[in-house]
Image 1 (tube, one colour):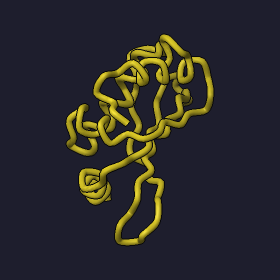
Image 2 (cartoon, helix red, strand yellow; image 1 turned 60 degrees about the vertical axis):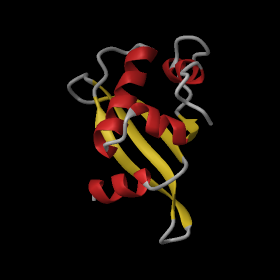
Image 3 (cartoon, rainbow, N blue to C red; image 1 turned 90 degrees about the horizontal axis):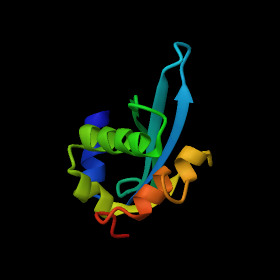
Image 4 (cartoon, one colour; image 1 turned 135 degrees about the horizontal axis):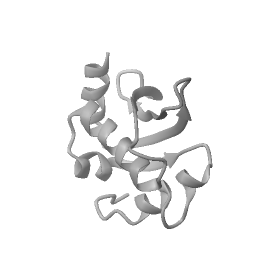
Length: 116
């Protein structure tokens, strides 16, 4: 299933990423990563669960690194490849995700490999 999603993402020109940070029962932080893309066979946008990744800490930089690693590792795309296809980012709105300077959104906005 993941291989099929990875193949579709590699063949797509655009993708969106949605992420949410949560804590499991063992008090471990985890980032859930979802992607939205246009499925050409279905001729409609679809949302797929992509991966779960543990960040090194709760900082925006570490959460962003975890999201980036999860996408690259699951799809086989280099960071610059999938970031060049990125058209939107969605999250739950917490400060670590939406901070203008040190949150994921701020880091994403200032990342030179995101071109869209």
